[in-house]
Image (tube, rainbow, N blue to C red; front, side):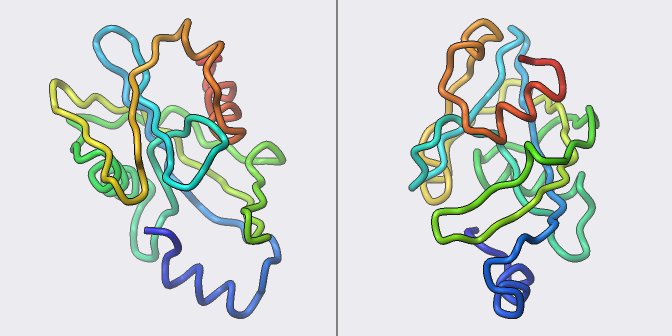
Length: 153
């Protein structure tokens, strides 16, 4: 989903002004210690994480479960809250000029042996990256901030 009806309503009233938005970030890590990252369709800024905005009436954990299922077709066997991050490194300006400042609940996810498939709409590619590969991978700024914040970079 590109923009929730709630955020669209805020944008109609606020224009491109910065919005403070709660979000959930999911870090699926497999038995080999590899992290699953995604490439968002229409973005050329590098690898990103699974996740997105917390919707009205939803907890961050529920958002993490929903986003994981929507984006990569998997349902985590377990989710563990790792950290809650925000601040200047979590502010973005989208290509259309909209600005957002995210406060994200970061969850480690165990997917077990489930197959993961990009949804083809929001996510066009997925990849399991070793911790060593993360140091040289092209990561978008939010992903880099999250991984640094939780000590994976």
